[in-house]
Image (cartoon, rainbow, N blue to C red; front, top):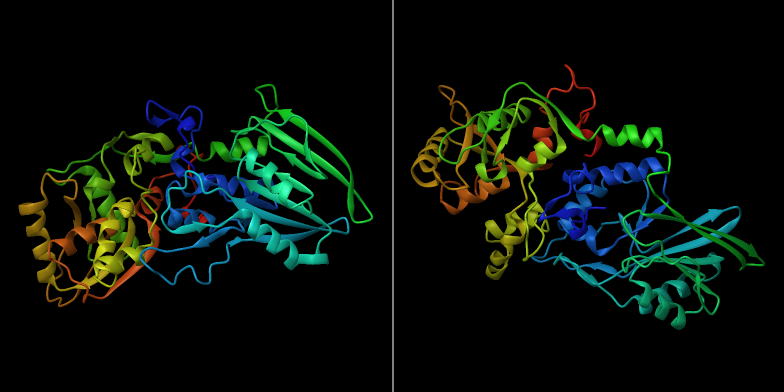
Length: 436
């Protein structure tokens, strides 16, 4: 759903022609799965490509079950935020035509980029769950993202499994594989085939199976509702004037973004780190490619996902409430652009402006600002992204004694809602609130 697999890339850049909604990094996929009416999906390794925090950000709007029985949270640095997390379940039991069907999810430990989870041995977990469920279910189905080989091994060792619907190894299984009485299927990869498995249950046992694999080619008629839905996300909206960024001076891009931040959060000042909006967006209809190439460009990374830690974990590191060694983990949070609002004195704002012009100018952390200092005011509010806050803490301009509020909004989501979608282009994204 949120993956960045190399098959989506051309010369280390997103294949926008093949996947015009790539920039949303899973947000659109969740909404589409809601429309399709799926009952359950299994968590795979690529769901963590942009980090555990981002995965949960996407899952907020999911109306279906997310399953993984062998996944557990192992937050670094430690946080209690996942203790009561229930969006990813180990299994669920569905009632279909009077038959109780237990569906268990399994996740591979291969190629997982997040440092915030542990993957347990799937065989131990499945055996325990089947014993726990007992006679509450008639049919046991595994949604597996382990790969064909591990699926076969799982079926050999746990014969009480009725069906394994597999993934991960991209195996195109045209006829079901039988391991004892266990049925194993997999449809390949990239939505190129659709698998249909009909089962007949007699006397609490799967007695007959019909399986077919349908190739999804260009001859398949598109669904009008799905096509219309996806077209809504190909363009963000309309921009009245061209925006250009700079790390040397205040820019048109900077003014647009900082002003929107200030107005959205009713603050005296809005500011953000220039590194979060590098490039140019021309006036007119703004495509998803145009927008995300500036506000969340693809970055080739070899050291972890850019939105893996929660904002609270990052703040605990910055405020020295985590072990000192945890500070090295900040490199896996350099893409977090959550909004933070602080209260400070007018003199602090003057220090920020001076620090920006004397130290940060020419650096990617150079701040773009918008706002003014009211007369006779002893306390002001500033709204900024998390990377700007980090830069000003490191510079000694801000400190953790200043009251703050952190919001579960990313900078690009706020700005996405700024584009005029009502004048001439009605196919833009309607509102970030559909995700939040």
